[in-house]
Each structure stands twice: as structure tokens, then as C-alpha cells.
Length: 126
Image (cartoon, rainbow, N blue to C red; front, side, top):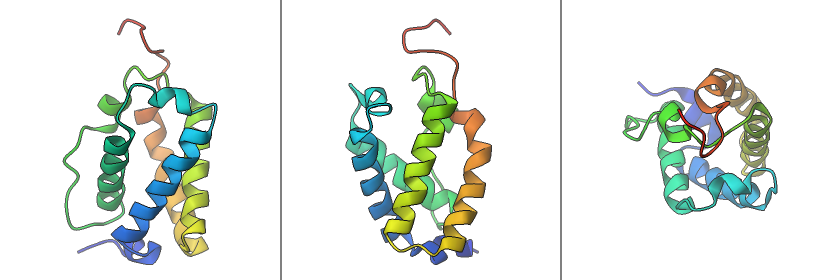
């Protein structure tokens, strides 16, 4: 049974559009764009769509790398996490997701912080 949150947000097509807009914003953000240098941004966006759709109640399970592995060594800080989360919530509103659904997404983001944030900087051992 799928989570009604994905349906409330507008389904997978809305998530795909939100991720497209999110990546436009992230790449234009001077604080965040350096993390993506040397990485296939389109591939990252595609993985993010699949992750979010699965996490929000989609029928297909996510088969990509876990969040800790995917973000290891990138040096993502709490501030960077907050900036990306803020951009995500803004683009969800922009694509027409209802405020209550956006608020629910926000509550799902908090537990992801320790999986994404790393004290290690690129090039650091460990």
C-alpha cells in the first residue's frame, strides 16, 4: 500500500519536476555548487528522483546507494543540508504541492541529516 504523501504531492511526475528545479537552484547556489564539481549532475538528479519517490511511498523500492555511502567524503555540513532542504521545500511549493504535504516532507528530512552530513572534507582520510 502506498503512502498518501506521494499522492498528495502530485505523484512521481511532480517529484521529478521538483528535483529538476532543485538542481537548477543548487547549481546556482555558490555555497552548494562546488559539491557537484566533477560529478554527473543528471545521474545524481535521476537517483534523487528514484530515492524520493520510494521514500514518499512509491511502489518501486529504491535500489541506489544508501545516503551515507552516496555522500561520504563530500564534506556536506549542517548548513549545506539546511540549504538543500530549504530549496527542496520551496520547489515543492513552486510545483503546487499543498502546504500540509510540504510540511510533512519537512518532517521526513530531519532523520536524514546524520546520513548526509559529514565532518570529513573531500580528500580527508577516512
